[in-house]
Amino acid sequence: MGKILVTGGAGFIGSHTCVEFLESGYEVVVLDNLSNSKEESLRRVEQITGKKVTFYKADMRDAAAMKQIFAENEIDAVVHFAGLKAVGESVEKPLEYYENNLNGTFVLLAAMREAGCKRFVFSSSATVYGMHNPVPYVEDMPTSATNPYGYTKVMIEQILHDCCNADPEFSVVALRYFNPIGAHKSGLIGEDPNGIPNNLLPYIGQVAVGKREQLSVFGNDYDTPDGTGVRDYIHVVDLAKGHVCAIEYAAGHKGFMPINLGTGNGISVLEMVEAYSKACGFPIKYRIAPRRAGDIATSYADASRAKELLGWEAHETLETMCEDSWRFMQRNPNGL
Image 1 (cartoon, rainbow, N blue to C red):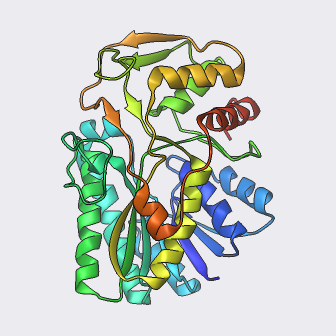
Image 2: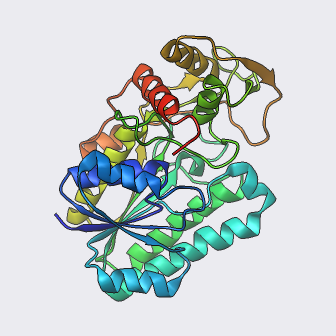
Image 3: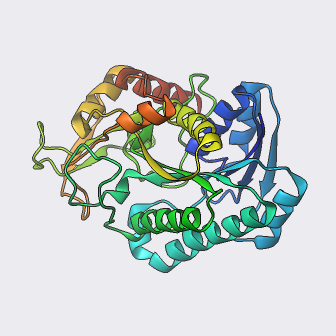
């Protein structure tokens, strides 16, 4: 089946994707500097699958480490998750975000070129649709961003597009994620952010296990059914399976292809609070807070390209996403 290098493979989406690759018969090599993840997640990936992961603790900007990985392993394809990813922090530390996310990608691409590795799946984001496109988002809409983190995704997509133009053998699938939530059914791996969570679901989970007092709902005066922001939430296992489909698609297609991974359905913050309350069996405390700068009212995918090109679609329900997240939180109240 081949050997896949997964950068950022110890993280939330990375670890779930490693499980799906291993269970599909691939070998997995992980590069991660553990800045926002733990090596324990890889031990649990091995526990779930009964298969070994080759792990390099290194920074993607370390050219010598990257060269070593390609020298010691016959890498057939790369799935690139590694990067800084907190929107608010990117506004405070733009230089760090541009330097880390862009430079790391340059080092990785240079190592791939030297090794003759031509298949690449990039962890992009729905944030590349910016503020001004109408929903649902379709892949051929113009891209833009509202913060440095988002611009690193826009820029890396452009860089990959240019690499494909320069080398007709190069194959890139840029997967534009919507809002991944949930956890593996085993309860062994899930979202375990360091510090205060930036995303809605781990925050709700920490309120549910008593680590945080209440959830702040940013804005209830948007033009949505209940006034709170609407997002396309997708189960992380569905998302992970999309990467296996993308690697297989890239094997038979050259060039650059952006593909949305979402459900095509919008869920509001208050609907999510209600669904999670049902999953854990008691009401989640929340308060209404002012809107956050840069937040948009509604974001959801047109997911038809993924179905057409990858043969992929999301299957898990909101109920399952919340139940799986709650199971992980209960079993790991203090993280991994």
